[in-house]
Length: 493
Image (tube, rainbow, N blue to C red; front, side):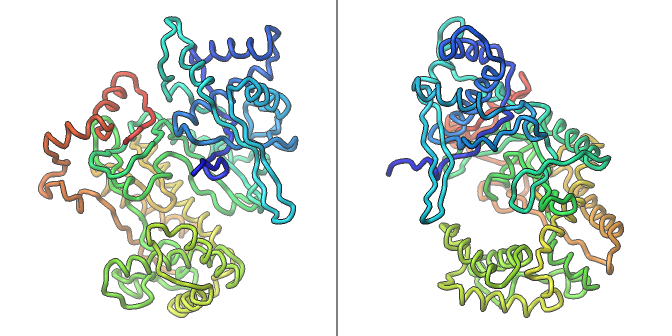
């Protein structure tokens, strides 16, 4: 089947940057070929950003396209979200001449007036551009450019505000945004100095992971710094759960544990009604089990479904829109049989009704849009946890309402996140006492090839030799980190 560029693409990144001499030479030679000897500084800068983004995209996935806008209301020069001042006219001039000279493949965007469907334009590097980039060396040999030489501009905005339509919204700085930005940049600086990798030995699938991508941002919603505010970014947020369990941190290959709050948002909603959920119903209570199910796999499927129900119902405005959203989600995202077989929106509506009846004390919050307020609460908690560990120079990875840390720091992290939750609720004017339970996920508990009496992974020498060449072992990447303090893109086959 031919590759669909509209299905396999990512947005153009206006903050790709590099001062690497080889890339600056490429930029200079390519500009001369395309535009002549007279230098236009804006065009030169746009050319650098475009070829850097295309090459990094190629390293991540050679088949992937980069989606970009051609409308003149995009890429505003005077915007806090465009620190390199990329402008639409020089940008299009660069892209069009790269397409014309067959360095880049271009795919037109479209708008279907009948269906209302639209897609913006796409580009990706052709072999001619890759060869040009990788051959531009003094000895004329072709070698890939290390991924870490293509970075993000240091002045990129990390405090993001979006409007109700999820578009970027300009804002004036306050003492609060300045404080948040400083604390977030301190966190990013700590992450940048930390070896964060993944143990892929024995993993059954082929994957690519860009471990150079460590920068985290905060995103606020609906044009308000009182809604949202969660921490996004970092490659660990974009891998599957079974891969997160394989993350290691620092060059001594310390295994990690993920710790999160148990049913955080349900707990917070019950707190608003003056009820301590786990204090009332018991620490073993499971708010996502509506029915008594003995089969483990079936129970997991229904738990996943009711987690989705809660997420949708506290973020939408009606039962009708909730049914539609859940129906769309389970039809488009259930290739692994993650959800139960529900064959209509009517069945979904009945299941939602069961969930509402189980949680009658908080049912008034459904369809109220309270979800973003709860995200704001968990982002404040996360902010406190992150600030504490940055002050101690201990790296942790934020996953919204959970955190990943080395096994050495797990007890300390659990104490801090529980303390941060209580402190935040006190500041907000808590409605009643709360029992903030946490739970952990540790691959060592279930990994078949691990000796339960030994905290480190045990493999046969045959395993190591066989899978070392498939890039599953972290050893070569640890050596590179120790010698050069760099990370790279993992290509695991």
